[in-house]
Length: 266
Image (cartoon, rainbow, N blue to C red; front, side, top):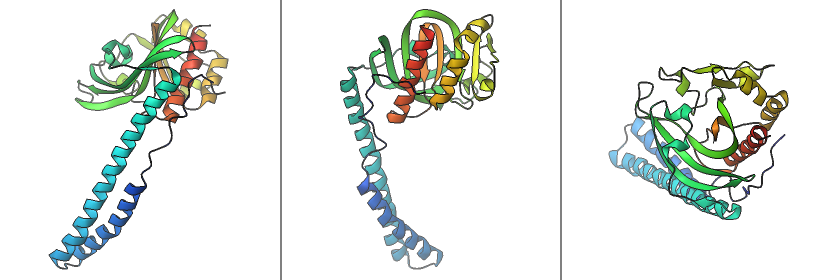
């Protein structure tokens, strides 16, 4: 069962028009191959240089055109998306806009494409986030990132972390020696705990079990690529592991948010 929201995702499409980029790369490929064959056969340096360098230059031009046209198309799509949904572009977010399950792991963050608005009547801020760990796990390496929402709730909850195995936002951080020591994994009925990880502050296991009812767990599994989340107090943080804004990532983000709001605020 997919959650329906009032969010209009039509401006986003799979990718930019890169016909020129593809054409240049297709022309470059045989030139690279000819140059490589001539090198292997020890033919004249002039012939090698003409074919190989021409192919390399065309390939790099094609790559550049594809990259920049994609960036430009994504920017235009995001602007249209914000206008259609009544959202507002903002300059940046503060560090408290990421869940404690991330910032307590000693990471530094960069926010891009930030915006704010309302979802199902609730205030939220969103951004594309990249983070770098500064401790021993992966010093100065970008190991987490993607679109994220922070939603302000009416009700307060103990801290609950929900992750999919292998997710770079939360699961990787938990393997570090600076991981939160006061969290405990909750075992839920069926095979749900084999597919997802649910952790809660010790002593609040009952609240996690009340949140993850059989009906809610079924909705998460039926949704498909449900987003990871942390709820703590009246703040809900929702994260996807995609590296950019597109229709699929935003559908995961906002669809998961609507399901969570309905469950957390009932």
